[in-house]
Length: 180
Image 1: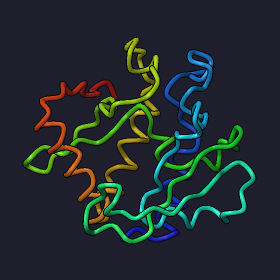
Image 2 (image 1 turned 45 degrees about the vertical axis):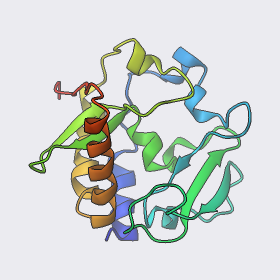
Image 3 (image 1 turned 90 degrees about the horizontal axis):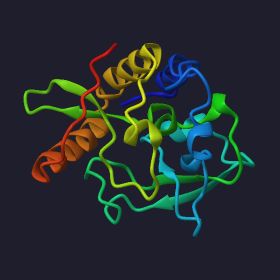
């Protein structure tokens, strides 16, 4: 299991690198950093990542969800934390899922991890994905390094394995990131 010290390290190595040299939010109006028209958009924290927050952040709205009801692996603890931004976040405090986007891990059946562009059905269009924007090598390397550590946590590995098998069952095309 990842510890608070592990999360501190993960936050440190992913703090600086960004997908583009500038703010990628200028391409889309920061669409992934908003709660959505119906206040429905947000992200789930990884197990234990809640230790990085006080739950008194004035820019986050918290919800506790049952992992079974939201299709998380059986190994995930109850509750899982879903957070929504209520205003722009301090970049140094943004959750890992935000730091990794638009990349995701995909585990091949032999256990090899590929870093791919996100395949999840999104309620918005991300130019980094749709326009094939080249990503900074430092960003890709930091995301890869973070996932190598995160996959040591069986719960997170279970989620990535389930997501990977789901992609394969749906025959989703994988855009593998190789330029790092």
